[in-house]
Amino acid sequence: MTTGKKPDRGWTLLDHTADIRMEVRGKDLEELFTNAAHGLTRLVAEESEVEPESELELALEADTVEELLVDWLRELLFVNQTRGFILIRLKMAEVSRTVLKARVLGRIRGPDEEPLAEIKAVTYHGLSVQMDDRGYSVRIVFDI
Image (cartoon, helix red, strand yellow):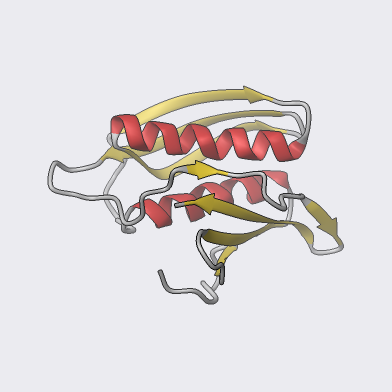
């Protein structure tokens, strides 16, 4: 997997010895969670310009923003692996440090389409959501 800057996407792949590490940024929590979702999606599927054909309503609660982020990405990974669901767009209804409600629009993976990466898990390894004058950032490690 190629590492380096992905301009204007809100996420960057970073070097990691055995797994995939990604830095995600956003001006607010909504943008951080949106960019994290799109970053994960680009790890498992090619970018496509097709119109969404399927949708999911997701509602999550957690004790901390880090737990909420991991739960969010795990849920997206789960529907990708079990249903072949690939995110195209999402509409956040609510995002706070402990609650996320979203409508996720996507497509179903084609019968001959293989995932780009086999991600086993979203981990808590070194995970800490940081805030500064530019917004939020986090580094996420995906176990492959």
